[in-house]
Length: 215
Image (cartoon, rainbow, N blue to C red):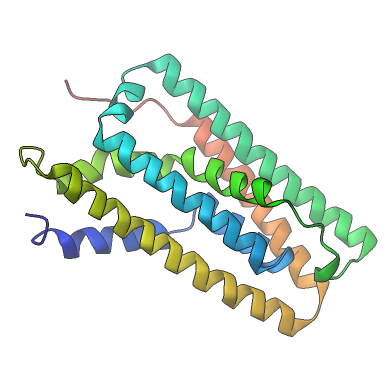
């Protein structure tokens, strides 16, 4: 069953990862301003958070969250606030850069923990990923099989690998492009656009209703 569903699952993962979302603008803005090392640390955070999403779904814990309106709304509000914070921070940085006119090399670097945490929190609170692991992911697993944990882990790892490859390629491409341009203006524009879009996603997340669950 795993082999039969592998191609459709991989295609679904590609669509999920490539479609624009909070992760896209987080990595894009980081790679274009702070550099590839900071972006790669955030990607590591995305990877670990995705494994958390997958195993929470595999063990049925994600369903518990959806069955509790209070818990769901708490996580939703925290996610919206964090995305809004990131967006506002990027917008402020773009405005500050326009006043100080720094180059890419002068952008303040975050610590390893802060970079990792930014990626992890953005992904763990990402509603697109939550929906995928609650609604779509279980459809590819035969829970009657004695080895369904193994097949589930393989599927999660495929999703993780897709994330790692896509955002790593994006990181090196964006970083090389901005460095070749040799101007801080491009970084300011990408940071500002990313900030606005993160605020937009924060509003969407805050307005997201509790999904209906069939008993």
